[in-house]
Image (cartoon, each protein chain N blue to C red):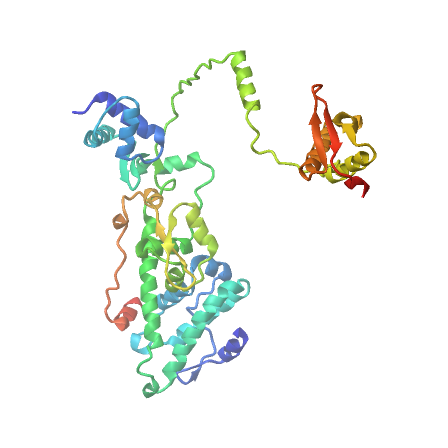
Length: 266
Length: 186
């Protein structure tokens, strides 16, 4: 895009005359790029600067001249800061549009469409308001630059440490209380039961098939421990409920399992 | 004539705080210390301190977040050498952005971009947010729901003013006729 513009710029025609030399008053400082980036906050700022610097009558407002100068600047900027240049290029395009419109006969203007030149002037006016405002703001006294907040070293504070009246017994009691709190966060671990009630039912039935009656304690195996007792009891109760056996307890507190039918043999 | 003890206590509070204090804040701080004063007498005490400071290097300033004890600007040149690192410079672009927010609030980033004609980076908005000069006041009810920015009390405090209307007024477009404007500018 720039290259095309550059070729066109090689011999620009101004008022019918070839315009071969750069304007003498076009100030391009040696460190132009840096200067542009630092001193202009955007394309509006640059344009305003160029307009102010030019002394052209409004009737002869040479958008083409401003455009040329403008493009000279953005070409310098284009070298390094492409992202920034993009916004400057938009402005270049706007200027080029205005320039091309001015070459058309007046009648060809669409009445309803806003004159881009007027629109640009409005934007420049609006921008200038805030630019001036920002300069005013920058001149206001600012904290730690123009004025300082007064403060002073603080006096020594009296540190009050309240006495803690706690005995060793209190500590023990508190610890005990904490430890005895129900552990509401514990998880339930579910294991497979090692001893199956179903299996025990079969065992009891097979025993009762051989002998009609057996004491509860004789059906237990010592190695199975408490769990064995529970499983055997469950199995016995299950069988009693289904009417396969009878649970008898005599005065010696011993429980006997007595077969009721002959199911085990069948 | 207000109580000498409470006047001195108020001065101590302003000195110790190193930031603006509201009258109500001073009142509750005094109350904590068993001193009961109404807002009017606290204000009177502050006035007395101000009178006492005449001809010294100190002054009390009424800023957005309350009353602040500060060193008169005449001594700033001398004070600035106390610190090696100067306060970070605020770029022209950032000044334009904060000015647009200050005078046109609430604004979106797009509003700022429209006026400035450049992309306003996230970094510049973030740096203003980090300074606590601006805050998000809401979101504009348009597609994308862009954040609306307003200035904060901190911003006013740091520019030594009490409210937005105390800022220098925004220049008006005097010229009704745009062409007249241009001929003047040019």
